[in-house]
Every structure is written in structure tokens, then in C-alpha cells.
Image (cartoon, rainbow, N blue to C red; front, top):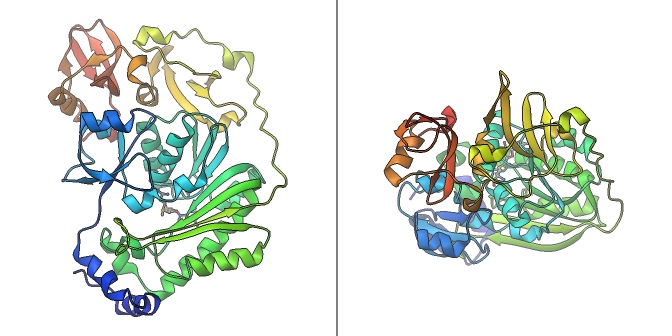
Length: 419
Ligand code: SAM
């Protein structure tokens, strides 16, 4: 068993009267692994037929969640194609509680690396606006890349502090997820650093930070909106006390549900969530989106690239790049899909465009598993397709772009994504 901090064990003994032995025994089992099928690209039934990873039963609280076993589940070609996201099963429990509906304005305030953002995006099915925010720039870049891989078409990825965001979005969002930075007690099996860094002082400092984040979330939540607060820790200061304190400050909220997932009670690691409903009240107006004639003007024909996407709207040129943007949202936040970029007057399609396409929207270069793996490593390959930009596909699902020149497909997978 891993060596857990004595003070942590002492606290858990006090919290889990009658269950402590079972709790401790749960550390003898390896951490549960899970995958969440990306409903934006493939239905769970189809995914199971394709069987890119060995699944081991359904996750009870997420319609697209499955237990997974085996090594390398994050390294398959189908993972690169965004057909699934590797996510700890308990971590899938909070998002369904948002009950997001198509067309809503949703904020994921602490979003990197993007497990819950991409889960929300799947529930939204491309309708409405999802703002995925991450304060830490390095983690923000990972978030952006995961949003792209999963092919979400209605997301703005931002890198702001919650206080800064709250200046722009007063009473704006219908749903907010606060998946707060926490002491990570529920992740001790998976993350050695969480064990090393644990101290009561850190628990209290996380709790103080969470309280501040919740205040910003409160300011941004529209009347009649819902907020889900979640952590992957057991400490009452960050969980039960945190929500009690929030309710003391904001007694108008209704606490609809709280749940603590404990590793000896469920098939998953530790997680906590609380669901708050704000009473009816102010909801900010839509943003006005004004595009100039020049921004709207373009003669691009995506069919020249072998793609025929449906539903792209607000196709506009911002700087040298072309985007399809969601309705009623500030253009500078580029909420939507980057289609490509003009370089020396020539259009180069963007990786994000390839990744958001469904099989029926692409006539690409079909490759087998071996060639796909080579492509993901950055290799070129022989290809009989006509010259030009083409999407490389595996079983119909896009992996990225290549440029065919006289029988050779040159690799245009972004360098940072190569394996
Ligand atoms: N929701 C993510 C997912 O499902 O993949 C995990 C989020 S993680 C638990 C919490 C995130 O909060 C981290 O990415 C961390 O960088 C960010 N964070 C740290 N300090 C913060 C702060 N003061 N305000 C907002 N977010 C913060």
C-alpha cells in the first residue's frame, strides 16, 4: 500500500466511523481507469464494436463512460482521432448534474486538461456556447489541444483568472462548473505528487482559494442558472464546509444535491460534487456580434480539400485566419472552429477543421493501422490520391492533414501532437 500521511489517516478515521477499515483496504486495489466515448464523433454502441480499448463494464453515472483496462489506452490511433477521452470514472459524475441543454451558455471555470469540458461539449452537441477557462497558461494549451482533438465546434478556450472573467460575464451563464483546484486526496492512488504535497496547511489554503473562485462563479451565474461545484478530495473544509460557507453568504441558492464518491463504496476514486440552483433573476443580454463586409467575404471552397462540412455558420476572416464562429459571442474570443490560415495568399487548412469532421463529411485518404501510427509519428507515406490537401482518416475518422504531392503524402500533423 502507498504510504499515506499520518495526519490524513487520522482525519479520515474521524470522518469515516465504521467504514474506515473498508476505506483503507480500497488502497490495496489499483486505481480504476475509464474512457468516455466522444458522442460528438461516435455512438457508444459503434465504439464498442470498433473495440479500440478493452472495456470492462459501463460507468453507472455517465451514459458514455466505460471502465477500461490494459496499458496504453491513451496511445491508440482512435484516441488520437478523438473517439474517446481517458477519464477517471468518478470524475465523470459531476457533469451530468449540470443538465446542460442545447443552446445554453455554459462555463467550465477551472477546465484543464479538459476531461469535463469535452464531456460538457458532448452533451451540448455543438449548440450554444461553452467557455472553457484555465488560469495556468501551460495547462491552457493542453486544454485547447484536447478540445480540438475531441472536435467540439462551439467552444471558446480562455486563459483568465476567475476574477477577470467575472468582470465581463456578470449574470451571463446558464450553467457553471467549478471543478476546483484541491488537495487531491481522492487521487492519492494515481498521483504521487498529491501524497507528497499533502498537509493540513495546504488543505486550508485550497479551501480559501476555492471560496474565492466560487464568489466569481456566483457573479457570472444568471438568475435561474445552475452551478455544480466539484473536487477530487475528501476534506470537509473543501467539500461540506465549503458549501455550507457558500450558502451562508448566499442563502438564496437552493442546494439540490451533494454526493461524495468514496473508493470503498463505488467503482472509482474519490470525488465530491454539490449542485446549486440560483433563483430566477437577471440574465445578461446576448453579446452583439458585428462582422464587417470584409470579414465576411471569402471565396473558399472547402470541397477542394475533400471536405463537405454541414452547419458551419458565421464564416469570417480575422487577421489572416478563417473561422466558423458561434452566434452572439464576441468574435475576438474565437468561439468555434479555426478553418485555416492564409499564408502568402494560399489557404492552409487548420488541424481543428480536420478534427471536427464526421466521417460522412470527409473524402480523405484512408489509411490502415500501421500507416496511421506512422502518420502520428510524423512520417510521410505513399498515396495514390490527387495532389492537394487531404484529410488522413482511420476507419473514416480524421487524424489530421497531409499534402499529397505526386504520389507522396507529406505529413502536416502539428509537431506538438506527434508521438
Ligand atoms: N476540470 C478539469 C478536467 O476535468 O480535466 C480538471 C481541473 S483541475 C481539478 C483544477 C484546475 O484549476 C487546474 O487546471 C488548475 O490549474 C486550475 N486553477 C488553479 N488555481 C486556480 C485559480 N485560482 N482559479 C481558477 N483555476 C485555478
